[in-house]
Length: 231
Image 1 (cartoon, rainbow, N blue to C red):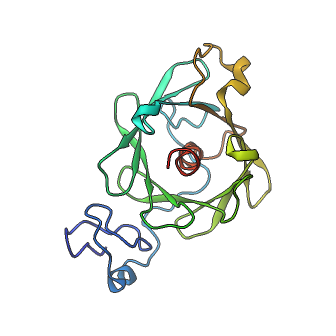
Image 2 (image 1 turned 45 degrees about the horizontal axis):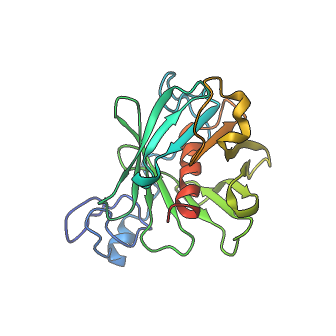
Image 3 (image 1 turned 180 degrees about the horizontal axis):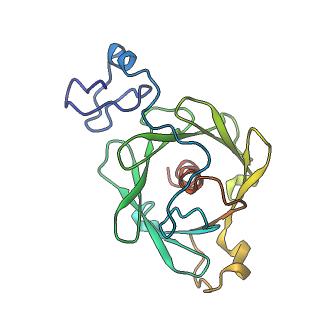
C-alpha cells in the first residue's frame, strides 16, 4: 500500500488526488502503485449481526439532523428510539461524517472528495476500506439523480429524486427493483409509533427488503443530503 510522501498516511483509495490526513497532492506514480482492488469489496447484501445500527432486520431509519451542528444528529427507529448517531468532524480536511453506534463506536464514515464536479462522497468502514462511492449525475438539477458505485466503479444503485430532491426512490440498477424510499419524515407520520414531535430537518429511509446492506443505504441518504442541502 502506498503512503503520502508528506505525512506518511496510508493511501487507501487509488483514485484520490489529495491525502485525506494532510491534504497534500498525491503524485501519479504513487496512485499507480495503489491501483488495485481494495482488500475488502462488499456485496450488496450483508449478514450484519442483529442488534446494531445496521441490523439487517431494520427497515426504517429516521435521521434527525441538528441544523447548527452541520450534519450531526440522532438516528432513530420507527419507535422513536435512538439506535445511532451522526457526527460531523468539522476540522477534517475532507468533510467527514461518522456513523456511530449508541455507545459511540464508529460503524462507518462518509467523506466528501475535495475536488469533484459531481459532489462525490466516499462511504468507508471503520478501518478505512472503501465500501462504496456516491456521485451526482451532472446536469440533474430539478429532479436530481445519484449513483452508488462499488469500489471498482460498477454501479449498484440509482436514486431518482422528485422535484428539488426532497424525495427519492432507490433502484437496484441490475434488476430495476425499488429497494428503498427516502422522504421527509412527516410523509410517514402514521408509521412512527413513538410519534416524533418535531419533523424539521428530519428524513426517513424506508427499506423494502431484508437483504441489502444497511450501511450502503444509510450512507446513500446522508451523501445525498450532504450534496443537495448541506454544502
